[in-house]
Image (cartoon, rainbow, N blue to C red):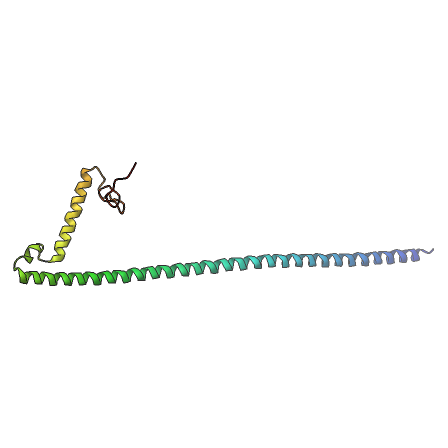
Length: 171
């Protein structure tokens, strides 16, 4: 065989092998890209599910906060209404007390003056009585060895250390 024919066959075989190797490399590269794309899609689904869970939790937390805020505002409104009612009742009691004082003054002049405070106002007399009560309680707790500000209270239904009705507990 002639040399040039041998060289030609070798070159053709090398070219065919190169073309086959190039095609195989392209297929591998395409397969790797598809695998990478699948991984990215799977990761996107996982993150999307996480985002939905987080958003649901955030919405639930915001709803809970709004509900709690509404409850607090409702309690505050109730407390304010109750305070206004108490102020109204106090004003009614004060007016009633003044009317009774005026009637007492008409019935027995000079008697109503004994029940007024030093400055002449019934409110100050009540405040003075309250301050005297606090001082008395503080002196009693100090004598009993209790810390100042400590107030011993009987449970509801117990007076003088006995259960409601005055009966002694059976043993």
